[in-house]
Image 1 (cartoon, one colour):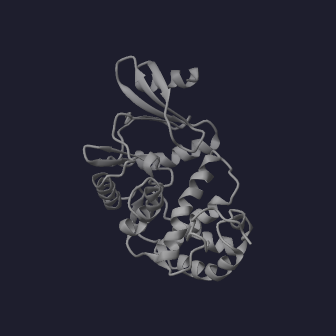
Image 2 (cartoon, helix red, strand yellow):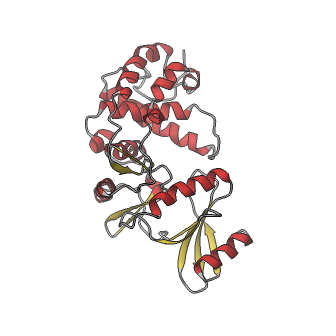
Image 3 (cartoon, rainbow, N blue to C red):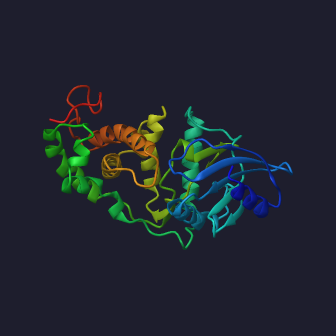
Length: 296
């Protein structure tokens, strides 16, 4: 651990760091480590390493600094100048997969609790422009075409349907949203879910958290999107469009692995959208994503 960060943690918690280990997961270059303190306490530190990660951590603080709820980890300390966040260590809590029925139900109950919470005043409303992936692909299809997940013929026929459905997706609402629910951003303890990494938090339609969790849940061996979200063609189009657009873009501040993960979620989300909208599979052989094909 960086000595400056070690000293900062000592000052923030009033105890020296006895040992630390890097925490697995995450796609940002922020420092993430599990700590054992000299007084026996355990903690988790998330600290900025550049201006981008500092901004993301300050975005997280809009939630942590305003709410105390069972679905949030306990905050131990926060230093805004350096964007250093200290939370309770959840490293011994249960993780998923495997996605048992009980684990899925715990997350769904947790998302209901998130939606029922009063959104902090500092959390902004959802910007619908962030979920116009198919419209962006219509304007510039080349990044998506390079993913080689469909033929040009399929894209020409399906794109108008996907753009129209995406534009009708019910995004507005007054519920607190996490918007980045996935297995490595949640813990299970005592039959309840605890969500971490709140930098994407917004206010909007509560159904979005289920819809954007659904592809990674299925990817991890959980139930299908239809079992979690129900019949929701417009939401399926919006989710698939988000991953379709993002997967083809260059990486800016996050690690390159984020595009690999987004592409993997696209391989669940696009077939879901095809089924929901009665579109033909994007690849004729083997259905949607029977394998990665070649654009023609």
